[in-house]
Image (cartoon, rainbow, N blue to C red; front, side, top):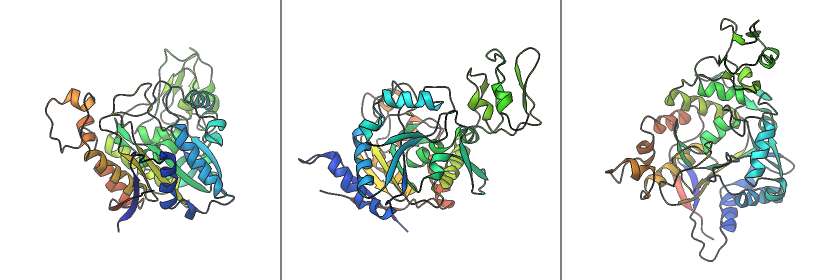
Length: 371
């Protein structure tokens, strides 16, 4: 059965785009989420400092205001990153959010880093899927009653594109959960970076990592379960991920994590098809958009939403200069934009797997919302 996906473009026609956004989310079913006196987790990406392609706070604030008007108790949230950038712990994560303009004053609600100070505050959500039996999801997200994702739709190096499913699945995984999605093996210790502080040893629940006489940590792989706790707590980048997960397997794990996030929760998802950069927002810079701004889409179904978003991008003319025009002197105008950028990714299989585990439908009805 086709799922409804609602759409507005960026033509103002004398109307505020914020008013159009409000009508979009109301039409897409936000009032039916049962918001009154409920904790509402609004999942966003605060942007890595230096990258300005993230969704502007003006849009976020309007969503917050509508949630409040319907009795909800909203908070903005994200989980810490696995890599050691500016958002790998709650202190630096909040500082990055503030630097990019996300404060309680600008967005109208508080900000909670869902997996805590070091990325280790999570709940295990049982899903018993092919790759993931119990997903490690940030506690504040699990504890919320209602879930709303606000997603910047763009390219992604591993999955081809990043939209609702990527923001939900990867974004809501605690640091050990991100390790599970990114890596098919156990972490390693770079001894040149280890100072022998024993934080990893003190925080390992399995006794798998010990600081030896040379003041260097060493992992006993017979005991290690690959939980990623040592990666989360290491302040010196000595405990590291082994980046070895292929795109299709990663997609499937992301889908399974998204299933865990949405388990038992009313949800709405919003994709912003603007500043459609070729790569992830986790980089400290962003490239020129590959196509012009398309609009904003919303749906209760994240699979249909991402499929409609891909289709709209692929129907849009390629811009120059951009990563596509610069690296492909001659290209078929009907070619898949995301495959042109990331030829080793397979987003179609990712959406097919999401549908197969019950996350939604790849079939959709695109419904234009007018003021």
